[in-house]
Image (cartoon, rainbow, N blue to C red; front, top):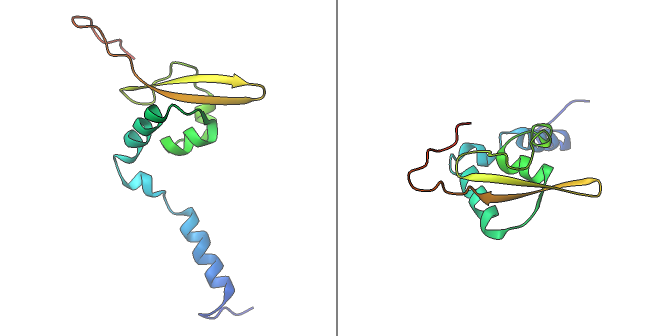
Length: 105
């Protein structure tokens, strides 16, 4: 089948290319920390897929994390299993007490 400029196949290919393009959040260096801050403020539980999308990570990577994981400085994750589903809550990392040394990771 020959493709023409008005072809549905070309439109479908353009949609596929747009879907495979890097997410806009990866182009914005503040997208991840701002998204994490919004998640802290909202206090909502996120699915593994939602958290992975927010962080620009794979779901498999996120699945391997445990409660207390710090995806980046200033943020800590709480993991909760409910039935067969795993849920995550993003929390602000506890501030160290004055005079104490920060924990090494």
